[in-house]
Image (cartoon, rainbow, N blue to C red):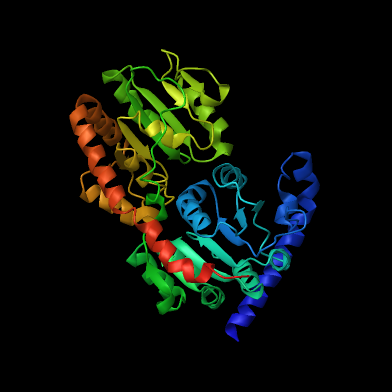
Length: 423
């Protein structure tokens, strides 16, 4: 009864929010911000004639979740070569990466979780199974998937303490949503415990690890443009305030190592211009990767990586990597990806989203926590002055990542009973 009332309130709130947003439609159209709107409203790009078999539907929020899911996606495609694939994303950048890395039979933005829009989308597609990556608990989507006859599995699932407190404010709604899920593959015991506390059935939750470690066995391509013999450090997936944090560190670093090149990669494309403005105001010599210049100029201090999907290729050239979203109170981004490349890692104290991986790297002396610019400058200075120490930290980090790489096989085994089928 309580869950039914909670879902009714959720539906009413969704319809109200959609109605309130309608007056903004002409402004969005005028500003050119309506890309993908038709897909969000349920107009899915179905193949002509539909699907011959019920597809598998994978949903990943954005770029990080999409890349994390690639090894599992490839393994499932090998196991079920005749099964069509639908991949949905919450963000446009996630959709672009999914199209490039996965090439599914249908790629779409996730329809709005309101006004039964997502219900109609699932009724049309009728997937065999819905595979949700990491933390996307959309009550409408899960209800629609169940009504369409799909099995539902969560993979690489995570739940922070903050998220648990937030979801618990509407516990009947989210407990009912999790009750529709057939299997939950959690990243860690802590994630599993929080999901059970929110209402997931204990016997449906297992710990299979973090899929972001699944790419460790892949050979990384070299950087996409010549960097010369200059030492390189990388600031990856930076959030607001972190570009200034890194540049403050580099002010000290450049005094001791004037030839160091900083590769600066803001987390989201909409922040590229903001980062460039900061570089211009700070008087730093920089160039944008998107200009297509064939190499990095000798006078360039910062390469602004304003492209999508290239960051991991720069790790191999780096002496050290700072992972963003950790000084800004965001909860942390992928700390395993630079470790995969065998490079020393550092990050701030806010690693709630990646706690297990961050702790494992620190315990192995493969990563350090930097809480102010002077600490980052000192850490990078040590790595640049002692290449043998940097190489050893990188070796330890890769060993940690390899030890976690069984997540793909464990996840595949856990979800296979819910994915296979004749229909």
